[in-house]
Amino acid sequence: MLFTAVMVVPIGYAVWLSLFTERQSGLGFGGAETVFSGLGNYTSALGDPAFRDGFLVLLGYCLVYIPLLLAGGLALALLLDSALARARRFFQLALFLPHAVPGIIAALIWVYLYTPQLSPVVKAMEAGGVGFDFFSPSGALPSVVNIALWEWLGYNMVIFYAALQAIDRSVLEAATVDGAGAWRTAFAVKLPLIRASVVMVALFTVIGSLQLFTEPLILNKGTGSAVTSTWTPNMYAYTAAFDRNDYGLAAAASVLLALTAALLSFAVTRLAGNRKERTA
Image 1 (cartoon, rainbow, N blue to C red):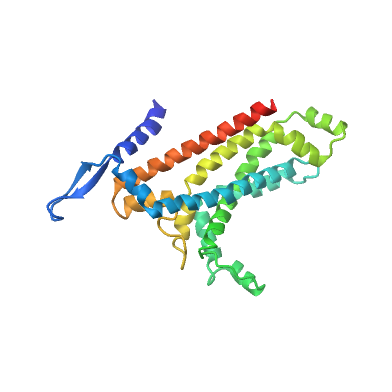
Image 2: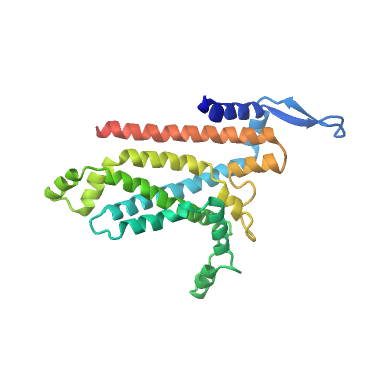
């Protein structure tokens, strides 16, 4: 019942809403009327270059963000799990704290740090002869990736670290007795044993990446920012709904994005399943 209320009904309503559009009657002087448009909203969204370009932005974002997040989280977790690590609890808390900051607050903090007239970071970079415009067309994507990494790296590190802690210590001791060094133990023993956690994090990261919204929305307010109001598909749907009052188009864009997320999620789980079968 709860699943139906919070998942099936909203999705069904979004699909239903996407099949209608509002049109002005009486040569524009009458009131708006809701008419059935079928797949019209879908063709409008797919035919809009701004919507298609949003998926290209998401592609670039995923290609940079997902490998960095997974590799960074695994590296930090392995370091904390190693015998050489000290003050584990302190570093766990320190790395996790950025995730406790709400996304919109984190984005506002980084927009301040990106703004040349205000940021001590930009001033220090300029003093060192390093010039970089975080709001430029070439700098917008790295700026958003940096904010997202700052927010989520510690969270995923905690998941990986918990999985590593669940490994039977006798297995690691056996690897050490067999002559495996720290690097071989990490990559040949530990990582295969936490494959399920890595797949889970990868799946959630793919879904979360496709929902990119808060960080670019705040970055859009930066001075001279290259991030437009339709920079990602989510922002496109938001603009269509609340700036243009075209709820049918917004619903269609949202449904298309949800279908993309579902297909990619299926691809990730399928790929992980095939690899597991080959290694079994």
